[in-house]
Image (cartoon, rainbow, N blue to C red; front, top):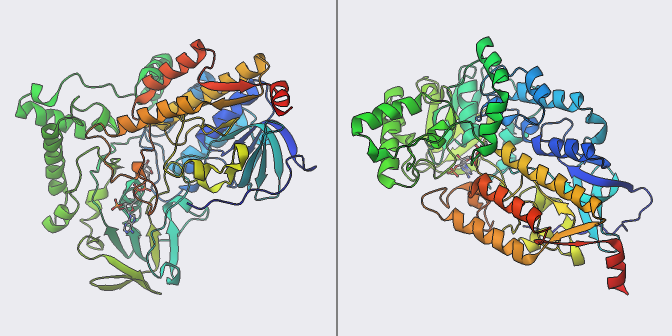
Length: 553
Ligand code: NA7
């Protein structure tokens, strides 16, 4: 990682505007933070790099981009009125509907006037004297904020692999995570998609019928299972509204923020026949239930996991007509759940289309991009459009690029040189009054539920500080150590996400291999938050400006 230069401008620079809370990022977490802080009576400004709201759901507007958590469980549940008036059209909404929803939320709660678009934070420096953050954005605006909240997301910095000659390609080239606002015309084009993670497997079947030819460059096959999406019927809409409180209860007590209840049986409590019949039910179930409602020991018992993988492999072989292609699409290097499983609609079926072809990069690696296409060890293929579905600098990518410097001018990237260190995934020692909900160590499940918990905690904390006359808050190193050690311990619990997963940062050359999620789940987060309140914020150092002045004397 590189260390951005600090701003040399003084924090009292006349054009800097004062604000209680400066939020960065108009995604689901940042908008909720804006709403909560404003409702609590703070002055709030939100800076957003894009030209519209949505965050990840603004930039990832590639064809086929959609939720794979149920729409009504991913959207906000803080307002029953909002829930009742917004009718999601599908159980797993597509990107345009998601963007419309978030715009609706912004207008319904009159949040837009607090948002500045086209303002990418370029530096954020803590000023110890005043206990404030001096924040500069790419559009020239400057703010001095008491509290700085970076809600910049975990999937916001697209990753392009270092393929020689990438810039030489003269055709159209797009990254799924930086998709243009204008529609891309795929009709009759020769298209390549590189990458078969959750994004690639959504794009591929969506454009397959439109293109002249589609070549899929796969390095690692993933355990894809059906999303089983459907429109929400009028009866289901009525049911959702009638059961709002019950749904919230389940979501608020779910360890990973999903609606799907855990199964009460281990795999070998059942006979093989019963297991395969249950697997069939899982195959037909919606989204993440294949992970959360499958046999209780699926991720812990190797034999159980292997049998589910055998079942899924049989399904893949049953769908794909060409046996060689089928074998290439069956993962051979990881078990189900070791990497983030994608959920698909028509993905395997797309390969039955004669103009869709799979290139196995394990057999024929990419050597370089040429002006006209992609060269692998088997030769050059020419393309009109190349889609890079090659993932993100996950977890810490955005925070590392904002020029964040805390006490004594220490850069966040230096403090985190060996991987992120946090308490509750919201604060890090040496960076007073700085919070990062929805960042590293935040979630391992249905993200908005965890991130919302963090925003609630941050807002309650700001209110506590105000009520008790404190102006600065900084987590202690020992609280940070305890939480970070806990995160690392949970990360190695076999056989959850493997180290080959980008959840350890392993997709980015040179990035430290450190776990970036919180696999202890929300119960652990809730327990720690409760402890913070019970112990009067012992995990933090709180101070008033008079304390700081006396310390300086
Ligand atoms: P992912 O899941 O990180 O997938 C990236 C894909 O790109 C994956 O198939 C990678 O293969 C592939 N990749 C990366 N580098 C290369 C190179 N150099 N050559 C060929 N292929 C490469 O990102 P997504 O955008 O699909 O999904 C991110 C999240 O969005 C997902 O988890 C959901 O939360 C939604 P690899 O597996 O590394 O061999």
